[in-house]
Length: 348
Image 1 (cartoon, rainbow, N blue to C red):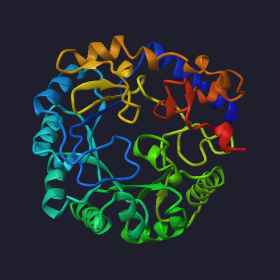
Image 2: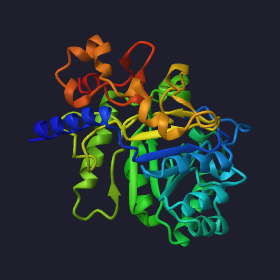
Image 3: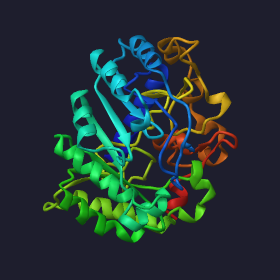
């Protein structure tokens, strides 16, 4: 039954390549960040670039007919001097919006203002217990400030989802994190694996071994099907995970939406398929300051609306090719035309 359903999803993916639907639109409103995370996929800096509110408004007006869910991210979006004005701009145009944040700059006042601007979802990164989190984030005290921010969001009536990136340094803390977050009253937790992208490529010692990744998935399955569980536990949207894990560690089957369901705008105005995809010149689809976003969405993104597995010898020979579809675009090596992370390698 799973095989049939996965093939149905593959057919849906093929139709989206011809008739894409913009369901999620991510704005990297700044690449400034107050932390220096060892695994950062965006290579954020302390003094960077900001998107202007007028730029965001221009894009939103262009995509009214598609009406995607908007996500404001960074860098750290709380560092943008016009964050609340941008949020109001999104709300006034009738879009649902969410935010990803490290939460270290959120206090009760900030949380209340975010609630007033119509924030509906917020994802907060909390990567292990205090020592592990601070080591990964490159700043002592980051964990305590992040937990304070989570509590402030809860006090404002919001329900933050916690995302935890597991790596070799914090792998042993899964059960302790589950207990801690349950005690904090968190309703949704997303444990994920560290990805071989961005700064993590310079710290490959952090990457989980195949056995550890299997153990992480088993842990998630156990918690998801625990009738006494106090918190939703779900793996992220990334990666084809094989028949044994699909629909067991998350509610949906794998389908990478980059360029067919999802698009992003970088802080310099460049239009991309996904903010996590490698920032290569040939993958930039245009720029919001010179191009109409909807026209770009409808007529470009060719690199993401084709079967890239045809370029990879390993993929062509793989029996999981149809269901996998080349896995996630953000872990595809566009220079070598091969996946950086492949379930066939992990399951061995």
